[in-house]
Image 1 (cartoon, rainbow, N blue to C red):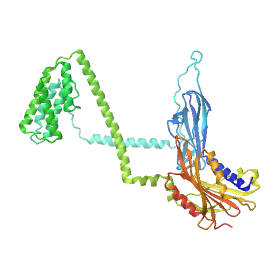
Image 2: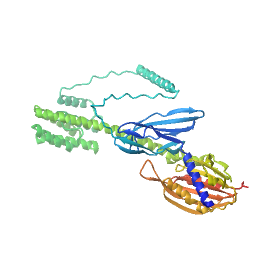
Image 3: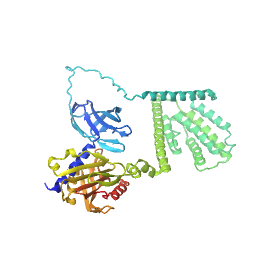
Length: 538
């Protein structure tokens, strides 16, 4: 094995080991085989510091498995750390072998993927003659491990007490207006007659409110027609109402003349002109229209025959149809109002705050770009570099094969984030025991093979020389790749840049990776590249 090949192998081993060590989420299931419809438990565990923000996956289905229940997260304190345990109850109602896909767990805005596990679902043979059947057990309530639950109870009681006090004061101090007893009419004609008399007492014409007068006048006529002969008069246009009346008159065999229909239609159309075209009839025309409505109501009432059994069935069916229509109308109003409120809230937020506000406050890479950056030296031979966060050491020396120990003096790696996340940066260094010549342009091949092992596709690469601000020469490899998305059929495209250097009888490598759609990540990459220095090397 040549030294260049050996170094390529070590870098690949180092990156894979670091990627594996970043698996901060343990995944397990309590059974690998279940019977159809039986429940098994998926458990996710992670250990974080007390200030960490952790978000576990939620949903009705994980792959082809149905989520029966998402249990509350258990928290176990271990010194200065918390162990978070999240359990899910899963099942499947078809036999076969199924895979629980890799799921994202968000820790401090960084996604960590769980391991994918397989479960075998077998058919259940039930013989009720030989097998005794038992009742379904009640749901067992898990005891909460939080010791401060009583605080929520006290706050809830205090809120209820305050609300009760204000309601009591309001009811005590408000003036109660006696409600008028609802007027009950013996028949639709009686109701229409009383409403017409009340209309004259309002003096709408004297106040010039002709539009309101015609609106109430025609509403009285429409209400009478709807209640007396059961046609949808209130919701119909003038043409629809006249047509529906003609059908009802024929069905009920009512003796109404063509003149009655014409006079009613004329008054309704005059009302339409007043309400929508701002027409103003003369005083004597208004008086004539009022008399025509009163006469029409009386004529219709006298022509209504006694209801037969089929008429009663038709009436009940019509009333039920009207009830369903009204219920549907109210439901649509509620749904429309709710959607409107949500849309208005979102629109108002975007108008007052703007899309830039959301980007600046919720984009992880934008927060990294605005953070107070840290400049430090990593590895041996050391690399001076500036990053948004301090890079953490990854223990990789124990994984070196025996044949590499005789050649490699020291191997170190420092990372932030993880591969295929919002942003990933890694600095790795390797020093030889003896002077060694390594060709930098051959190092990327093994890196691409490592990515292919992680299911990366469409890997594109370009290589060019690179010089740091202090004059150190190296190689820059950059391009893109596509990784499969465990939560959808499509893939996620990532961009990457890798810097290779040969300094002080050693090799240094800087890897940066981010989603291709992120607009802030390239700014972070440029700042990191411009900060690389080797001035302090001996």
